[in-house]
Length: 418
Image 1 (cartoon, rainbow, N blue to C red):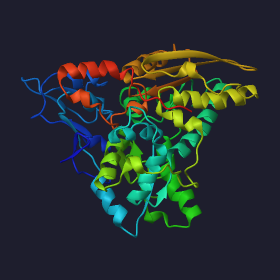
Image 2 (cartoon, one colour):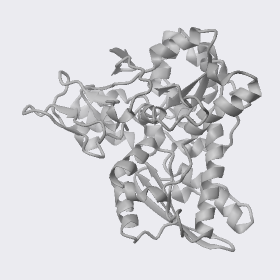
Image 3 (cartoon, rainbow, N blue to C red):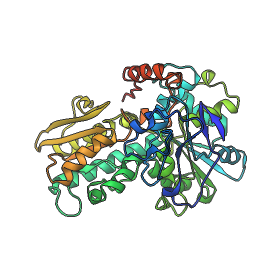
Image 4 (cartoon, one colour):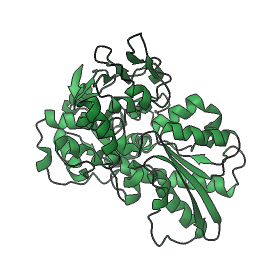
């Protein structure tokens, strides 16, 4: 075990195992105070009391969606991460025969700065890229590139479903498919709705495959030498990276996944003065992106980006204002009717949190859903508040201060902008 940004991590870098058998988060029974905050935060009931003292634990990894909201809510600091590739990654960065690729998510650059004293939600994308170069990453690529690819693919799929009236093998509504906690939740509890899920991989899953195919070809390197590192605000992305189907490149598409806290730890351990770094851009081959990719990190952002494409394709005209803020949501369920000239009304819904997702899933299962497109984000407010982001130090200060911190968090939410 090692402590990383206030959280304990097991140095466990699994390969070729069934991720459903792994505990990505677990409760340290010696630290648990039996307050039940973890149980309240868990969307599936995977954390339960395990003895008469009300000590809690993840009772079955198959039921856990690995979102880490239990960890982010625990005032006792009793929940640890069970998977960490940090030690292996440090070794790979020193290996001259390995080409290490960075693949940071949009939301990471809105959380990383907090580990170095910046106010909540400060954008530090340029310094993040500079720090990755200082750490020794060979290629600074960016998941925002693949987020733009996702917009094109998912938006086009939505258009096809809408034009076909939701008939055949691809019914309406279409659900987004980029959040790994939501996908595991759907596969576990609503497997009958699988045809409604977008067939698109998540952005980082796309970038992993692109890195070892297109990226390798453009840089004239052997794919087998490339070691891809998914850098996420999310614990569930560690689960996604281990899914057996993530090998479409002919290799493991994602070799390692770390979260924002682990990246901050690596920067500090390497002695890099983060705040003194210049702002740098990612490498161009798989690093360029648009503002639409940036808003993927907030709830409603995927919906908004896809709707921009769908609107223009269905209407044949460009939006006078590309911001469709009506679909941005921090909590609960948000619905909207988007009027598209020459087509009619596109009905959409955005759910933040899996309890809200379940309500929409029940409507779809009952055949009563009026929507064309539904976005689901497991974490409240979206990826920017993922379980792998820096924790508010007040959460672990005391039960009283923890409660105050959770109230204040609503007013300090990280908010990516296009």
